[in-house]
Length: 197
Image 1: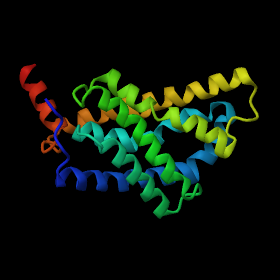
Image 2 (image 1 turned 30 degrees about the vertical axis):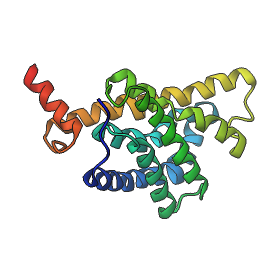
Image 3 (image 1 turned 90 degrees about the horizontal axis):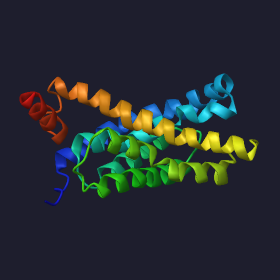
Image 4 (image 1 turned 60 degrees about the vertical axis):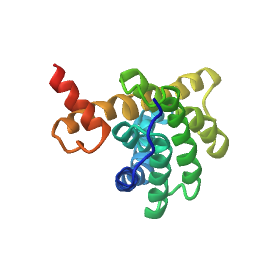
């Protein structure tokens, strides 16, 4: 069975959620990133990186339809730019490509699998873009030795899997239990699960 197209409600929900996430991105870009450099040091800086991938997984997990992950991450980047990020217009490129990486994971399941593994993979996938982009555009990780870079870059994937995958699923599953997402596929899936248990 083919995945259905996003409705007007889906688009509006994604836009609103993306605006909120864009504000989170702004705080992460302008405050948390610099603080993390001081507290964690360069080597462990990627531990916070996965938060920048939630723009794709939050709306996609709720709506479960094609192009929502891509749209969500891109709109969150647009919002971050509008709010005044220190990374300027490059966030739009990051938003599009990172959303595309998550979208590919969901598309590979035909938008039918939303378990822990799928969410962890979708959360980690944007690192495939972020790692080379950070290295080439900003020189992130350049001072590290080659063996240190392997650890450094692996943390991008781990952070994405944890923040944008596992934590997003855990939080939204609990939110859905309150009935506030009943208009969306996630809410209906949680209700069906509760009835069968």
